[in-house]
Image: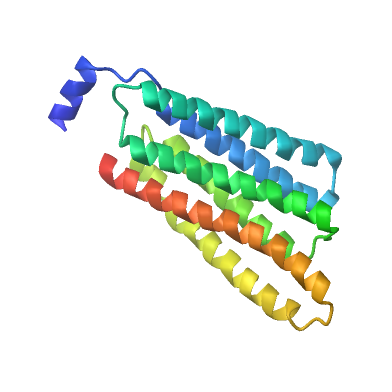
Length: 207
């Protein structure tokens, strides 16, 4: 710890990677929240909000990657910074593809889709909160980890139950379309689970 403090004084961190990750996490939360609201009202405003969140989150990620290459030192492992950012990017990309697939395949929101996305939105919001705490209070950041993981477990269960019900239908085409949408939400949740595993490892190394 003393050696790290000495190195920090000799080679101060030029870029605030904590802030960049926090900005990306907040933008993810805004985007998934927009998807959640869109499912209820199918508002063009929420559709545009999600698309804008995807764009801005991607800009933050690309700027982070550029700064990561230029930085002499980072507050924690640069590979973890990169991987957490990529994990978050995949979450919002899959959230966006959920909406695009529903529009393209004319899939209407049902109980399975609504509940999966509601849990995803909850998990992403908790993740953003944890990233916010990471710099000054990493132990506080850890408090949400169990809750985020629980949302993934719930989404997996809703996904399985939804498929079991869906496969009883005689409408094969509708089954294929709905399964595609379910899978995008499940993939978003899986990438959030991946990102939270990395977050936990970062917390352990910072404490």
